[in-house]
Image (cartoon, rainbow, N blue to C red; front, side):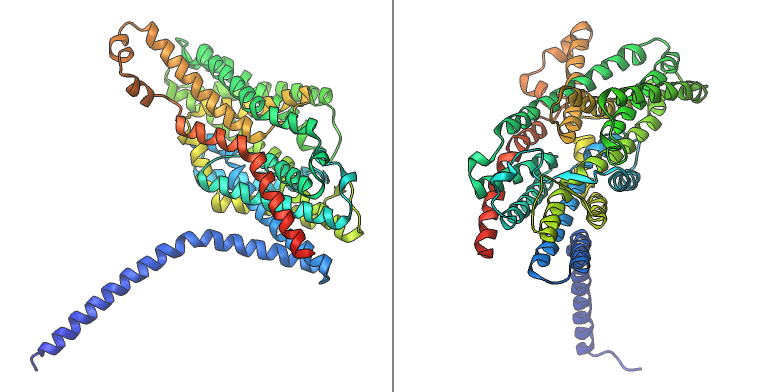
Length: 495
């Protein structure tokens, strides 16, 4: 048996070092590739949307524009799923009523169902009367304006998702349409009365959502949590709260989610809601009584009783969101398809089925691929949520939309839901301070803290509050500025 030579030993050491480097290189490659998986899948979906449009529209220059619009419509839908849907699922995940995977699955199913079953078959192409159609000179100008609005709103929502700010996709589209309209026809093209209402909703939506959520949390604390027999109080009040939730969602879906099937006025929607609420109460009361048997008289038991109603409310919010907000992705696309096909433009157009499919599946893909970031932020990073607090957020979202519809105010579901989370957090801060002041034992330890330490112990993260508020305020002007620049670029290229 021969003795290994020094050269053999050197070769083995060199091979070991090379293999070691290779294993590091492989790990590094996997690390770099992993973050690219989601964008890669999104890119495949976007390309498929473009190919689908090409199948329906051949290969002329006008139809190439439709293909491009389908690509950007799919991109916008993905961004809506990544940003907007977090508002519906974030509280349930933050309260541990749903896992991240369960939330994504439920949201994807109900968002798609809402878009395809109850999504509007007719959409306002000039987005709520922001731009006067008469000032748009030709169908070509109109097409470029809609294209600029679509691209700019998608880019803005993408940027907001990247920085972790839930923004209104409706307001992004509004800003995009306004900016393109100004670039095309000047400031006189804009309906400033409508824009002033939208600006007012920046404040009204979150404040109203926050106040309603805080009031329901105060009710739960007073009537259930701080009662001597919590379980008996829950048996009495949880069915009432479930009935209110069912009634609110019944009215909400009748008013906003079923417009494709039948036109329902506010009074009829409220009557439907009252009937649904009464039925839900009758069904829920014996179920809650049976579920609560043998439970310990503690807050942990209460969380169990609120978990299923919270999951149901999140699913219903997703259905209503899909029915309403799919138009943000496909509205401008539907307008471009109509103008390209018929050579004219109208204030309202029908949405082709293939266009609605792009919107519905794009929202689901965006949620699945990029949604967890915003879900975590809304659910756990603004303030700590449990099933009772999260339930108040979901209930507030439905009630606030109904109140806003009654008042005739344009509101954002994003602003309402996130405002409700802040409302719950600020109420917890106020309630905590109030209890400290009433408690003689806690006063020496807590109330003499340094101001810096008191700020650190706040129950709402101020950094998130400032980031989100700033993103809300600049959404319309930022999207408008971006849209105006894109419209001028498109016009220059086309000319």
